[in-house]
Amino acid sequence: MKIIIITPPVPPIFARHIRERYVPFPLGIAYLGAVLKERGYDVELIYSGYENLGGKRLMRIIENKKPDILGFSVLTPHLERAVTFATEIKRKYPNIKTIIGNVHATSLPEETLNTYPAFDFLLSGEGEISLPQLITSIAGNGKSFFEVPGLAFRYENKVHFNGEAPGVNDLDELPFPAWNLFFTTNKLPIGYKPLWLTVHASRGCPYKCVFCKIAEDKKMRYRKGSKVAEEINDWDVLNFNAKYLTFTDSTFTLNEEKVTEVLESMIKKNIGNKVKWECLTRVDRVNSKILNLMKKAGCDMIVYGTESGSYEILNNIKKTIDFSVTQHSIKITHEAGIKTTVSMLIGNPNETKETLKKTIEYALKLNPTIATFPILMHFPGTEVEKMAKEGKGSYIKISDKNIYSRWSSSSYHIIGLTATDLEAYQRKGFLKFYLRLSKIPIFLKNQDATGLILYLCNVFKRLFPKRQKSEFVVDI
Image (cartoon, rainbow, N blue to C red; front, side, top):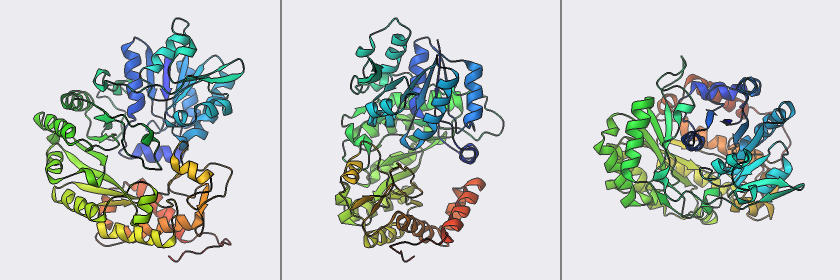
């Protein structure tokens, strides 16, 4: 049985941008490929963006390879492209079984399968256990569909959902991610950049941030430090010549004892001199001891979700952290020789012009290496989406179409702030932060030519927009 798992095709200009940049491969489908290969299946993985695959080119690949099963790993912003491609697949090749998984499927299992007939099956939750079971069921020699955890399927013209699949308890039992199914070991096509791979030391998150779907996965599971170090050194670096890694843990330094074990194992294998890496964590979960270990183990960048410069807003999003803690953590991170990125959300519940001004000024005060100002997205299944639908948080729905973009307007605006206003404050944040003499060299260093051109074009378009009547005007 031939199985292909893909990420949705991307628009041509986005595909070119991804391919020309130093970008990470997706960890989720690499694990799915690994567990299927371990069970003897003929499986291939396609990261459409990195392979520069729009819909037509991806369709030709599917036509040539003739899979029996086609899996879609879909984030909510990419759903429309996935549906379009799956619809065309089913029109041309109705016998191919299509499966959708990842965050969107987990958030809206029954609605997704009811709304999009192009998908035959849906898997909710982690797929390393449920996907192999589903495939044996499709082949007719496994469990009943009713017994596959996390599965949604159609039965007697109705969608039946078995409930979300439980997470993998022992992460160390999983095989290493199957990067070899994306490409041939050490033989990348000419013109590709050095590899940026992904790794994780834990799954789960104990926090309750209103904008995050991961907040529902409270059970923390950790890998052994020796296993993480072995994967990085013996698999990612030696076999695939990885030059950069991203830890996908929601809070890398959450448990000091566990992360110390990971870092000391990495240091024993001299990983810091072989590959650099980045991670995401909270400012209240670091100290000088941990940061110095991280630097020795090869840490290049820490991404901190600082979110806002207003205590009121931090309370609203359930992420209250004292500003003095944030400032101290940024300071000691730099002192350890590690770069920082801070993320400042635009459009939080009960946001105002004053709180947005505070957020921008706070980013300047923190003075991280990099600052981003994404517009908050109301993802399905999150608390903030529920708030917006109920008219709480000062949200007002302005479009029946769900819009999921961190860099443009949302489906909602806020009382006193239109979607256009939120974009204007986002623009103001970027311009005030980067158009300082001290930051221009950093921006140029962290952008390739394509990224710089796209950024400058976007800034020009936003600085000189078409005149439209607006109830609110922002003073930028």
